[in-house]
Image (cartoon, rainbow, N blue to C red):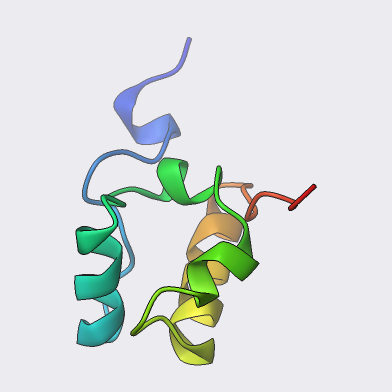
Length: 73
């Protein structure tokens, strides 16, 4: 049985994420790591404000939950 602590949830984006990336993700409707696991890295990079530093922080945060960015098909 999973508990709230077993899955990423609303508002769990990593601290230290650059402000432009935070704004870009919020504007696109992304508020959780679970949502980002359904998006490709390529698509996220297209958001103005999401650069290499933000991608790396998000990649590490996803990995902590055993998640990755979606693979673009």
